[in-house]
Image (cartoon, rainbow over the protein chains, first blue to last red):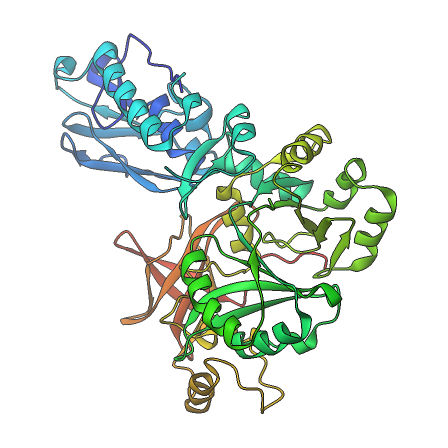
Length: 143
Length: 358
């Protein structure tokens, strides 16, 4: 399975992507690789705007047909906006994980340099694909 | 290595995501489990269920006696061409497996058992079959395809000859047609009309291909699970097992109490439980808030824990979380389910969750 990993974004080992904007606001979502692993999403639990979050703290939950999965904050900060469209359209995360399927925005003073870049994240994603291929003996997934 | 059905290469070619299921490499989905679910509800989809265990008993008389003792439902209710859903119980009334029996008239009986329980089922059945002098053989030379959905029978026009299709249409639900080696049963696990076809392992890939060409969507076990759950059908190992009786699993309707002198394995235990009053009842739950229900979530009535979900999912048809649950007898119309630490309110309903034309 080949998933998209845009080069301009930052990533976490737990499969969140981070896009930095002006005014110290970052947008967070889950990666294409993550949505592939989860399968069809059917529910997204969004946090309250204004909530203070710490790095690696669970701040949203995405549920697929298969399982519930926490979304972890990639930085310390305050949640300033959530993607309300996901309440009725969780499939946006499957269809367009990096744009329409964004999950929340955090105001932060954190430096993003501690996060993974696209090349480093790709190694993690490839590793997992190979693990999955091994366990499933499915050559199609390697492609 | 996991076992593979004769359609394994076809699944790979269609880009299936495969998972281990009861020791078999089976398709979970072919891209989108949700689309596959809707395809079966709205048109027609097909499932490779060749992993299921098919056992034939060629001697009708010896087998009838065996099955009337082995199974909680009564095969004496059957006639040639008719099918019966039943539990196979242990001495304490626990469910060893659930299965379908097909009455094949002069040709005897066919049982279709779950794949994951194959070994223990056959180990249970073998000595009893010997005692009743009923010969049997496992039909691992057969594959099994389920074609399900409101358009399923229409789609069969391209794969069945006209007289056979006519016989299938005329046969009605829970009947089977055996014409020239092609065994076609009007059974399934989705709540939709459709058939389960049992071709030879050799013929299965060509049949699959012709159904694909006819526009029948390949569907995986993921969609099969949400379809059966919406239809209120039990999943062995989740909704019932050897520690639970049919009476606390929503399967009391499958127990044939009449005639009272029929001795079947588990009967005494069931009669005792029935007389004492079953402590638990089996219900459907529909989440009244946004969210998804899963199995093994606790069910509450205010401060009181009253049960646990045995199967749960997001219902694509209802757009809500649904579950089957075993709860204390006397549950009201509403309850709360513990969903990852939060109590979400749910309506208590009698399955099925969806109504379909029968």
